[in-house]
Amino acid sequence: MLQIEERLVRKPDNNIFNQGIGGSDIAVILGLNKYRTPLDLWKERKGLKEPFQGNLSTRIGLALEPQNIAEYKDRTGNPVAMYESAVDGWYRRSPDGLVFKDNVPTIVYEGKTSFSFGANRMFGPESDGQDGVPESYQLQVQWYMAKPFGQTIVGECHVSALLTGPDHRLYTVHRNDELCRDMLQVAEHWWGAHIVGDIPPEAGAGDHADMVKRISTGNLFEVEEHPAIEEYQKAKADEADAKKRVKTHRNTLVKFIEKNESDGLHGDWGTIRYTPVESKRLNREMLVTELSKTMSKDGALALIERASKTAASSRFTTKFK
Image (tube, rainbow, N blue to C red):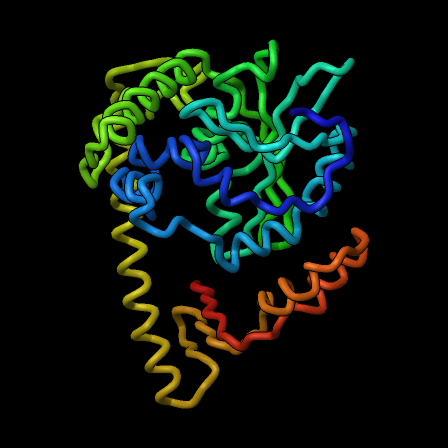
C-alpha cells in the first residue's frame, strides 16, 4: 500500500524482512555480498539460522534517516512518501520511499548512511553518476524497480548517501530493463529449486558474471582490447608496488627520527619532518544514543560536532631540493 505522506523514522518489520527474496538478498544470490552466502540465505529462510538483526551501523542509519531525507528534500525539492514493505510470493521489496507526481510514483528513494571508516571512499564522487554507487546497492535498487508499483514501472532511483565528514552525496540509478528481467528469472529459479524444492544451495554463488557486468555499463562502449588499457593496468600495478616501497622506507625513516628524539631530518638534499597532529573521530555510541531522539537538522549537525573526539597522530612531510 502506498501512502503519500512525509516519512518519519521507520522501524523494520523483521517478520516481513525474513520472507521472500529482498533487495539485499539478490546480491547474496549473485555472489556480491561478502558477509553472506546463498547457503546462509537458505538457512535463514528455512529457520535454521538466526537472520541478521541489525548492528551499530544499522542503528545509526535508522536514527539518521530523517536527517538524510531532509538533506535530499533540500537538494531536490522532492517530498518522500512512505512505502510499506510488500511481499508478492517470493518477491519482496522495501525501498525507503517513493516520490510522486500527480499521484503517480516516478522515483524510488533509497537512503544510505555510513559513518564507518572509509565510507566516503566506498561511494564514488557524484560526478560518477550511478557508477559511484557500490554494486551491491545498485542491485538492491534495481530489484526495487524490477516490478511495477501498482500499474507503474518506475524508471529511476535516487540514492541519498549521508557519509563520514559529514558529507551528503546524491546519485541517480536508471532502471536496466534487461538486468531486472534476468534478476527476476534467477531469483524465481533459486526460490523454486532451493526453498520450495528444499535443496540447500552451494555455499558459493553460481556463475552470474554476465549479469553482474551489466549492473552499470549503461552507455559504455564495449571494446575487447586497446593498447592504452594494458599500459594503464601495468602503470597501476607499478604504482601499487611503489606505494609499498614508499611505506617501507617511510617507516624506516620514522624509526630513525624517533631514535634520535628529533622532529625530522635535514641536509643538502632537503628536509623531512615528522610532527604530531590532532584529528577528530566520531563517538558512535553517543551518536546512536542521542540521535534516537527526534531533533532538528541544526541540532543533529551540532550533535555530530559535539560527538567528535580528538585523536593524536603524526604527519610525515618531505621537501626535496
